[in-house]
Image 1: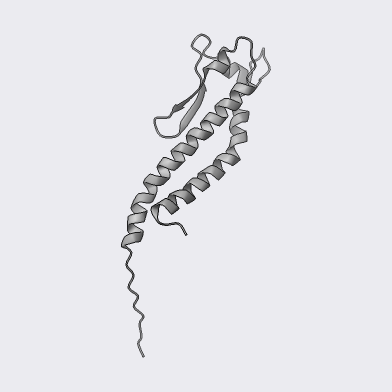
Image 2: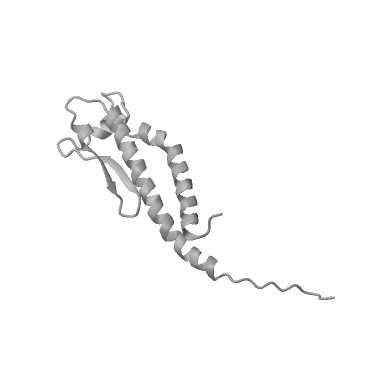
Length: 128
């Protein structure tokens, strides 16, 4: 009777897939993040108080230097107006328009990221 068990496994395919899955996941999550940022921007445009429409027109999505996307208001004529609207001042009640959109997208974004990770695993040969 043998006192040990020896199992031999060829792991080359798994190691190749592991080398690729990160790159595929990065690309898919970047797409999901851009979609989420665009949805937040659109919701912010619907919610923002309008007098001239300049703040709504200034709502911008851009790629962040360290990854992901930024949603912000580019309004050089009144650079702090978005902050005053979002958080209020001692003279003005807050009328949030950016943060509510971000809060609405939190759950859907996490679901889209999970789906992207599943697709990345499948495309890399690790799924199912």
